[in-house]
Image (cartoon, rainbow, N blue to C red; front, side, top):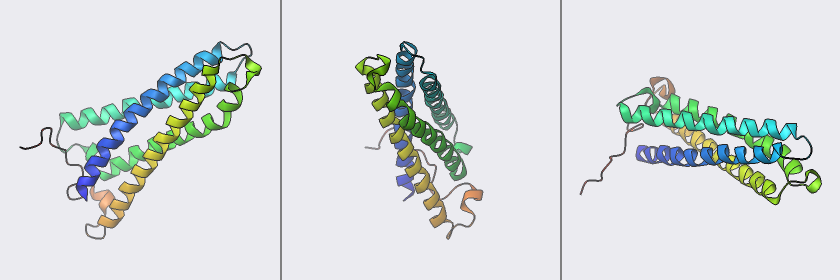
Length: 178
């Protein structure tokens, strides 16, 4: 079971980097459309700015965790409590971004009243898709970690406080043995 969590972390990291990069870049693209509109789209500009922040913050956070784990062994970022912390924080940031993007952007960017090109609606749909994808991924990762901590805590009491479980936080070998 712990090997599953090692793979889960790497899958979450890779998908998070991809989705966060797309969210940040598409938010910039969408911001360009909002600023070039014939009518001022202040709410869209604020939402796109928040999307840029969420994407950039997630990228910085994930790369910091990755570099810390590559540079040192037995670093605190491999602990269950830290995985719960960063998964929960990224989940909250991404669900707030996904909610506000879904609530405000389609009504502003997909109408012809603002004389926007059709790519404005496309960028909004891409932004919606990737924000909900990373939100779902962060929630699933958080739920899996919490469930593992709860199940393992019956065998190894205070799991979240003790920091680690047997096999949790191990590194995958860089090269597979022949």
